[in-house]
Image (cartoon, rainbow, N blue to C red; front, side):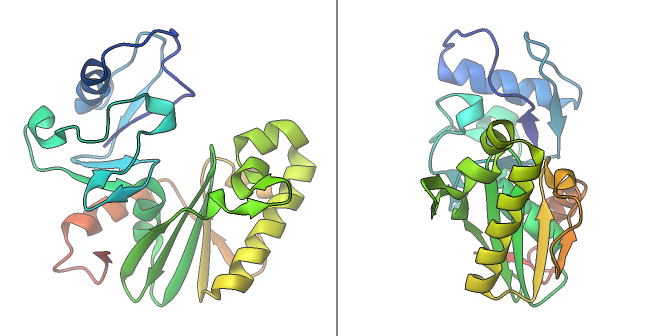
Length: 216
């Protein structure tokens, strides 16, 4: 998988979408590519993890941080190999799964979310649900962290976790994402995820027959 680390491409221009997408895919193919603004790419193999909803192996909408043109793009032709696309939170959830009913929440740019129930993973968009005068991710994503500061952000994050756990009643709760370290002591009943779990999640997507985990 190749995923751009950054808010945008940095140059303010609008390249044709296929060229921009191919830039990301080609640069990530050898695991150490870079873009002209210095942004780095990381590789997870031939499964692509997108921070947007994915349905039947296709992006439902364009990833906000990667520009337009991803919906309907022929990834298999571009890479020359079989490709599976998975929502990023679902991939982390699969890699973190130990059994039963598990809720994954990713505190990153926004609020990623997925549920795994008896080996079936269901990507979710809980971050867009209403919260106070905005949405969950407006308060506990990067925008909220910058706006409120760490201490207030931590309070909101704990409140959001508590609300979602009460509503969904999972057996296990995994908290991940780039900002999980800013939570301090994790809420009771929660455990921290790890970026490396995305590798396990990717393997499990390809090994659906042998693995207890399957894609919904």
